[in-house]
Image (cartoon, rainbow, N blue to C red; front, side, top):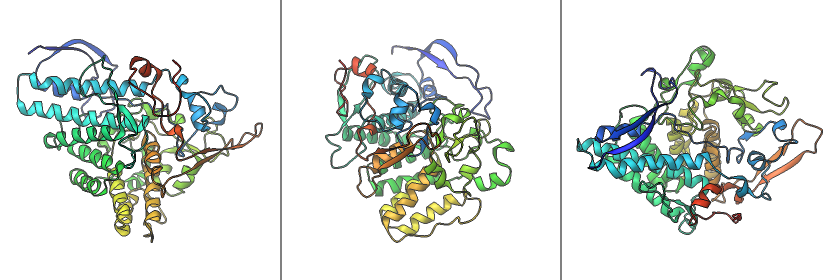
Length: 474
């Protein structure tokens, strides 16, 4: 076989016990990849980043400081925050770190999938390397699809524009865009082909486990409204890892100021990946939650009380009822774009709600809340209707799955169902009295929910077309 010469950036760990402490990224030069074990090692990629800046404020959960909006030249953040559909977003998005990085990772997975079979060595290791690369390839396609395309609608998915599927290593490829249904078919095929060969306890935390793979499978089924399959996959994931971090006990011990919980000690984490990097939560002032979400938390929720700052005069508009994440990553590791066990519980609760099994749905929510609510009413009462039960599930998702993609993706998928679609209204500013206060509205069918492909990608691939009615400036 031909040896694979590939230039890699190697992330070296200082210790085995903590996955947060790294030296600087060190170029290792041209490495010869020729054994199955080396291909398997390529799967491990600490610090994978999925920046959310192209759509961070297209939800009802995040907020901007007034000084960053009033009197500023509108950028993509301000346009999204004010739900402005009149401006040409395409010309503003000359490039996208998220788009580039996701496809760069896909090329990495394709390198492994395409070449590992030609290496000399253990066939079991080859199958494992290929399986791990496939589950991650599916995950990256899922993220891209739910960012740049319409949420899955079984009535229109076969014709709705999706993204380009990359199923082989080719830096110069110009594939045609697939439909939403075709991309989901590809994602699910990768998942099913990977599952038989994945491990319950992989080599390190940067390799996908069976608990993660089944959690992701459940999520894909949920997004497609394949409820029975989603329920089965969620239960399978929980059979491998059903642990919940006890924030009530953590609060009693003094929380992050008294006891650090680095990534290696957070028992809920199923996958280690980040918005921007492992230290992203150091910059908490970038992650301000809306008055609506802060009110939803109430006063007795450890998820808010332990980690958020609601009093800073430097990073918040006093009187706005907003708050920002105020806990450094070295004090508590919070996964933002990866998956964790609470999401699996929430998937299961939603499946039960959609199947009209209201008491079972609420029982799952109460299992989670027992580890989150520090005083007062812990157990929710069982509603009489599916819509009310779904509202409880959705509210818990908002409080549990903060930042990253989760609320943006949830709004998109739920907006395809009349029963759960939401019109978001945002009154702004709340404090500044020198400019008129306005109400901004984001309709469930707004084109803003579909992020335009970056101009750099549109220019390179003439077959790639927008999924909205916006115009390409060339």
